[in-house]
Length: 305
Length: 310
Image 1 (cartoon, rainbow over the protein chains, first blue to last red):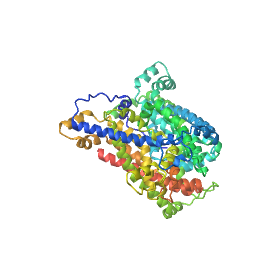
Image 2 (tube, chains in turn purple, blue; image 1 turned 180 degrees about the horizontal axis):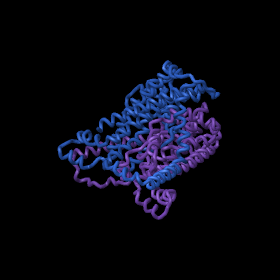
Image 3 (cartoon, rainbow over the protein chains, first blue to last red; image 1 turned 90 degrees about the vertical axis):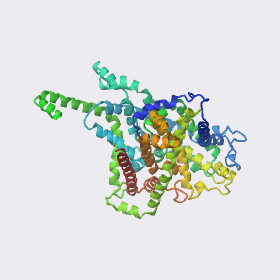
Image 4 (tube, rainbow over the protein chains, first blue to last red; image 1 turned 30 degrees about the vertical axis):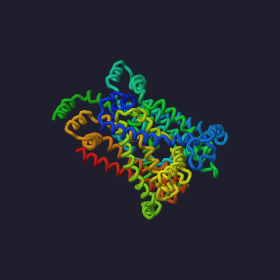
């Protein structure tokens, strides 16, 4: 559960990453050496593309195979017969619906709390001067270097004593108050001109009013980044639910799919792949829609790894 | 001198000073009111556990919650524990493979994607899709890709003339390299984005000037790009190191530490002792070891970076 930051000046360069057009240069004035370099560049791109996407293609293709064909020799990439039924059977042969409901509930609640408390606290760190503030922020940053794995045991004891382990509350508490949102929002708030808040203050707006009426609307890109990253992070989390959610009715989709692998001796891998594909689809959709915010958010402050 | 002078003139006006301390008190209250909602959760679930960890590591805390203070007995036991030594060794082995490999691949990819080739805009975002895909999906898919007899990877290797390709996850020699390949595949997009952001800040004029002086591509890379990229490379190295030391979920789902103890890493040792064997005190001692590994390496890297910048 580490959170990270990148020097602020790098953010500006980043804006250009997503919307820069690569077609500016004319093709005529190119020397032979440059042409070779370009061909090499394209070769690297093609190899990288195959390496990046082959596992995903394999996953989707395997989800459409029959149970035996997954392990056929020689390996078939495209199934002989497309078994669309895998996508029907997975719902009846597993608890997918419950898992998805739990995961969705957690992701929405965690994201809401993280965005709310994160942006609120970030305003305190970015705009209000008081003794001890910088030390406190240093404490937040210091946890970058402390992996969650090193304090998961005392945290588990604490939450067990609070009687919230084996409830969805455990995951909400675990994920919702990360320092992550505070970093991301503070970084962004510091790029917003102070004069705006100053003007609002002269007009008689309170600090809470400035946060709500000025800062929140101006920081929508950062809020979008934080929302997307937190949602995806909670959706994908495996370790937290593994430790805290023992009751199968509380399982998230990651736990459920994992149990699908280990519980059945004769796992139907085609069916499993259908489940995996279903679990990845929401992420792919969110990612496609909000890729700009992902890039900016990831480069500003990362997610847990 | 100037500062003391102003303070001197202000001191005979207590009303101003009082107003100032009142403002300060008001700001403190205001500041905390903003931070508190997050801080309650952060403090209780991150700071408190970190502090409690050190106490727990010196007790024999078990599943009944009954704990006696045992001093450094847990640590003495750790040093004699063969599994612990293997776990530390494997963690370092993983890091030594994963850190340079990911660094080079991510930087190389960033350099290519920083050029003006067609399609790079698409790649810049597509390359980190693996990073936001769930670990369970990644692990299950790669497990089958690596399958010694049925997997496409070994089939490919056989096709290009390697008659007895490695057993990957079933072989204790090849399991760790296989895990490193998957984790590099997963992480490279993320670090590539960091490098790309850094590359955008390298001043174009520096490159032009170096070219005027007759520096070739390679000279320009080592003498212009790399030095200008130092804040990014420093940051990436720190993050890569911490993330390597704490590697856990990928191994848990892909190999579960096996075959044998070939991929047992430190985090998994903690998990096993704590959550599977309920030896919370002993597991905490191992957690303290992980804690200090990360802190020491981070501080060392900060110091080295500082000296280099000076």
